[in-house]
Amino acid sequence: MSPPPAQAEEGIKWSAVLGVGIGSVVVFTVAILIVLRMLHAREKALQPLGPDPMPLQMGQTEIGIVDQTPFDVTRALQSYRSDRMQRLETWGWVDRRAGTVHMPIDKAMDLVVQEQRK
Image 1 (cartoon, helix red, strand yellow):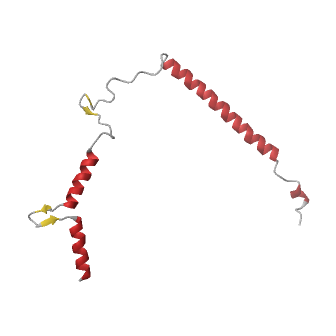
Image 2: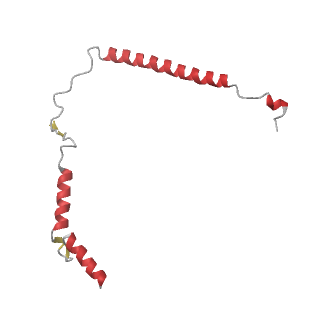
Image 3: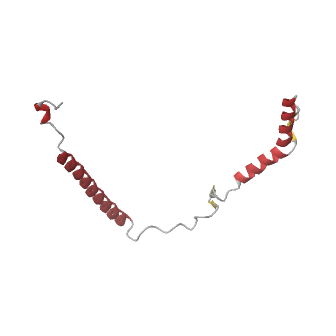
């Protein structure tokens, strides 16, 4: 069934939609180019000789009283992991007064399996 005559005349004007879309993209592109030119001009005005050189202190482990150890050089994670692994592989006291000990994880798993079998 065809639409009534009043509705048949209504329709989307695709040329107008495409014109607005393309116009928006052009305005956006021009605005970006203007802002980039302004940014470069401001950068040139603030630093006429180019960017500052890297400070001599960069890369040192300590600057003044501030520790500057980079994350990739720190050994804290390795130390933590080795402490955890040692605790999982050895016997030792957790709390002597309470009589709580830690045991190797392999032995603990064997004991749990034996208890479950009973």
